[in-house]
Amino acid sequence: MITKKKTEAYALGQHISMSAHKARRVIDQIRGRSYEETLMILELMPYRACYSIFKLVYSAAANASYTLDSDETNLIISKAEVNEGTAVKKLKPRARGRSFPIKRPTCHITIAVKDISLDEYEDAFMTRINESVYNKSRGGFLGGIWGKK
Image (tube, rainbow, N blue to C red; front, top):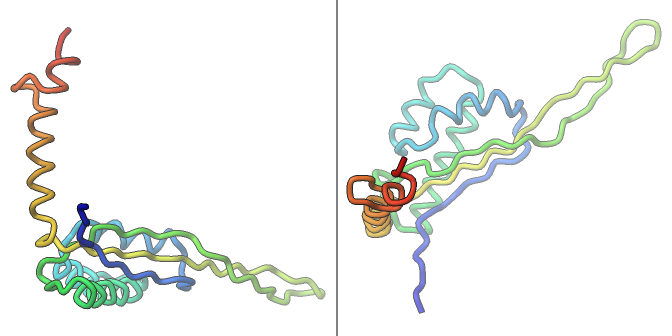
């Protein structure tokens, strides 16, 4: 029986008080980068969302070092996503006894970090398969079927 070793750790922040659109603006900049580079980017960006995301990235790295026994230099941000949460609804009193609704959006942020030192064998194996199957010059899958005119 083959057991697959776990190579990912994640941190989840729920009901963070900001819109998902503003958080995605920052998340798109850090997705796929190394852990150390991500921390530098988040410290230098001027957005309010950076602080919450910084704490989540730091927490995901701490989870990875505890559960996977990995070093922070080998971590990359493998998955970073933002989902909309519930909106906090309030009523603001206005003139003549009327009220105006206020919707305060929240979001859920998930950061997953992957240890690339634990996954070297699998990546090298998949790269070799992809090169042989999808390479046109060797008459692989794409060259053999769809390469004909």
